[in-house]
Image: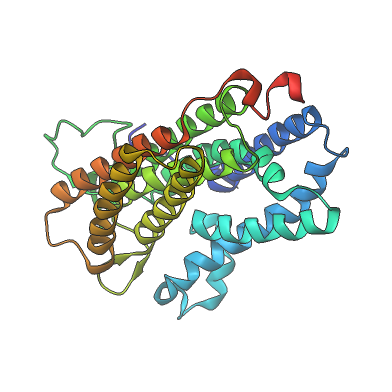
Length: 324
C-alpha cells in the first residue's frame, strides 16, 4: 500500500480520472438532495453540474498550466493529458465560482444559497480526488529517512525517484483527511449553526485555506511564482485575512463596543501580515520552524473566526429542517 501497484484500473482505466468522476458524482448527489430539501426548482443542480464540471476542470487545468508553463512549453499538446495529473483546486474554485454566478444570474437564483448547497459536496469530492495523486505518485512531500518515525503508510508513501525508492510525506493524504473533516463540519453546521446565506461557503474557503497553507509548505511540487513564492500559500493567507475581516465587521455591528474583539482583531492582523510577508518574500527560517509557524497561524485564525461568529440559537439557523 505504501506505493500504488499501477496508475490504471483493469489495465486501461486511470485511477485519477475515476476518482475525480466518483467525487463529482457524490457532490452532485448531495447537492441535489439539499436543493430538493430547500425547495429549489427541480433538476437545478443537475443543470448546473453540466456547466460546472467542465468549466471547473478547465479552470483547474489552466491555473496549473499557467504556473507550470515550463513543463508544457516544449509539448503544448500535453496540456490535454489531464489523466496524468495536473489540476489546481484554486483554479477550479475561481472558474467554478464564475460559472455559478452566471448560472444564478440567468436562472434568477440566490448566489449565496446556491453556493451553500454545493460546497459540502465539493469538500467531499476534494477528499476523494486527492487519492488520485497517490496513484499518480504526485503531490507528495519532503524526503524522509528510512528510520524516520513517519516512514509508514499513510503518513508517508514510497516514491520511485531516478530509479530509487524513497519515503516521502504523504501530503495528498493530509489534505484528503483535512477536506473530509471540513465536509463533516459543513454537513453538521448547515442544520445546527450557520445563520446567514453564504456562511457555509465562506467557512469552506477559510478552513480549506487554513489547512492548505500548512500542507503546501511540506510539498515538493508547489506551483511557484518566482523562486520562493508558493502561489497557493499566498492565496490562502489572503483568503483568511479577507474572510476574517468580513466576520469581524459583522461582530462589530452586533457589539461595536467590545474592546476584546478589537484587541484580538488587531493582534491577529499583525500576525497575519507577518505571515503574509514570510509567504510573499520567502521565509528565512527552516522548513520545520516555518511549518510550525504556519500551523500556529492557522489554528489561531480558526479560533478567532469561531470567536467572532459566536453561538447560534435554534431559531437563527437558516438551513434547519423546520425552515426548509
